[in-house]
Length: 60
Length: 194
Figure 1 (cartoon, rainbow over the protein chains, first blue to last red):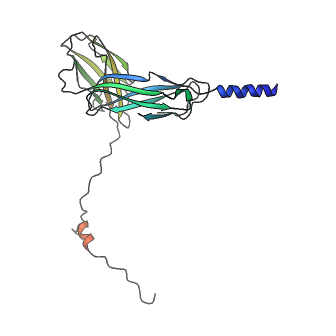
Figure 2 (cartoon, rainbow over the protein chains, first blue to last red):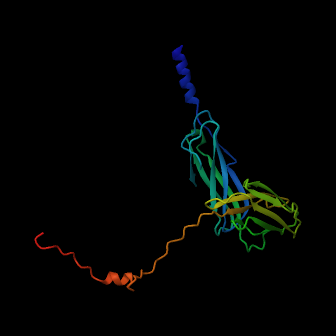
Figure 3 (cartoon, each protein chain N blue to C red):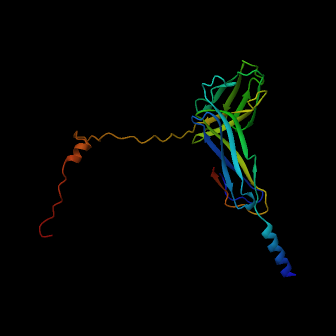
């Protein structure tokens, strides 16, 4: 019984994972002036059942 | 980005910043988002914009000023928006409005060849460093769907001045550092027998 429960826990942890979700991944500023700094904030969420790690953002 | 590790249910914010410089026309940039989520290998964030030049006489919307800049002496700015199109337009803020910023659209519907006003007022404290944000408006009634206005809140810290070349130092006896360098230095003398 104990072995069975341990096995079930291992299987459950193997399936648990962090899942990345980005709300509104694309943003349209519309018309903007020259010589200006424009910025937008994107919300990134973990909708999974485990910790989401090593989140990095790379240009391009 | 504020955090690079998220517990289940947690969120964080990533800010993409872009300087329009002398760009003109449509521009788009993107960034990849990587994480331990192996199923999200193609995640990306992106933006698009249509950069207009001040002297563009064909523009359907003119703004004056084109950007809002608050400092401790200027906390209230009135922006004029001229409708150079053929339809009545109205503006609605949809993103970027800070809680310290009071926005008042004085003219909700702007007829063709008419000008409307939007008042911006900074009600909050001034930050230490410059704060740069962008307010995006939906434009109803026009084929220009959106327009974005950059907002800068000048910080209270003095900005570091660029390093400048200094002139030769003048000593009290009138000699300059340049003159001092020309004098040959005398070697130290050691006492005899030691």
